[in-house]
Length: 379
Ligand SMILES: *Cc1c(COP(=O)(O)O)cnc(C)c1O
Image (cartoon, rainbow, N blue to C red):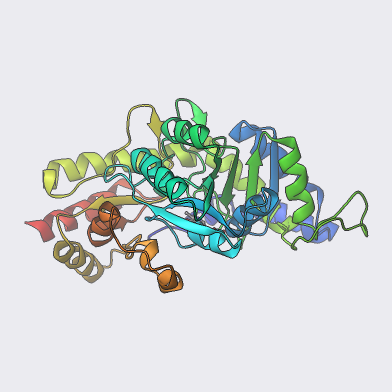
């Protein structure tokens, strides 16, 4: 059994993917081929925003937006303490101060009430200027953009949706990557929509921002090729990746998203029958849907989480801990001297979470095997 089975997906779409990649090889349009522009339009249409600008990966997508907004020294950017490192890394990389905010125990996502308290505290202290918030759609579930939007409006913050794991989720019928002033995603192979290498994209309705990001990703390009009007970076999605993503977006839309939701429902039902309350399954609140980048359960304590992971491993069942450590405790942020006050939910989650195998090609027999193994360990 695989944690995320990329080989099964390739076998199912081998003809389409080989043909799409073969066309790029024949045309030898490896950089900036027509497939890149086509894909950007298809992605913007799927998400429901005006502009999609592809780039090299999800981390650079965030950096490009922060650069375009002119965020840097003296600015505070609010990030969840429970996320992948990149969410806070890009803030520090831009020269700004990451301010870590706790998450909700149920959804794993940024807590809007604690966000407001954190913004008010930074504003009152006066050392850094509150400029932006980066909510994360963790494990495929959109953050609560309604409540976060109210806080952002009150304090004049930009909202950047980190949808690296969020592609395909919805909130009140709107698709992920359409929230905030801009949104970014990653096409790392294991994400909900992955390519065969690195890739990323920025989404926005703001035409001026889209233009600035297009310039920044191409060395601060002006109107013609050797006209450079700002300092930028080199951050492109190559044509081979775009061609693969065109096939995979179809598969995602046709059945893969529905299939992971079916897998999640079966996990929920079987775990409910076999272990009841001893394992907490993911909470998807009313009005939301998840694209289940991960299927993450909570155990009562660290000993049972670690014990369950070891027991699963013994039976050849892969699992993963996302994330073992709060962001503010990463060595790279040690110099910030952030203590854990007000970040207790994240600290507790880091000791209790376990992500089980999850992908659109996971069959009923495998799901049931995982659930039986969980029940056996907890008996
Ligand atoms: C994967 C991920 C990123 C970074 O994406 P890359 O394409 O690997 O650079 C950023 N934020 C979150 C939450 C992620 O899971």
